[in-house]
Amino acid sequence: MIDCSTEFEYKTARSGGKGGQNVNKVETMVEARWQVAASRLLSPEQIVLITSKLAKSISNEGYLAVQSSESRSQLSNKENAREKLLTIINKALIVPRKRKATKVPRSVIEERLSDKKIRSERKMNRRKDFE
Image (cartoon, rainbow, N blue to C red; front, side, top):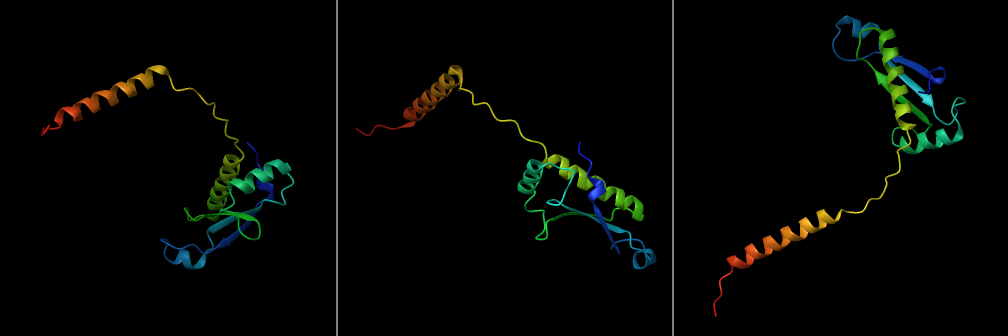
């Protein structure tokens, strides 16, 4: 698991929702941003992998951003945003295994053909001969 949280930028704003006067006064919503291409902790191959997998989530400026406003505390929202961003990054870095092509077993082919034959005979028996 790669921890590149030292490169994150944090931005706060007033969060909506419940909270009464606290919502109007305190900036508890936290946005964690990370510039993918400027990362010094990742190799160029990892950067290419992240940019290809998360292309829809990366902004035009090259930032990958996550917001958190679950808690009424700015500190816990900052930690939540950090964890969300790290999980997204680490999921993107997982390289899927290549699928091994396997042959269809003979028994499966024979079973399918016998089912077809039975179904065909059943439909043939339903026909009426008008000769």
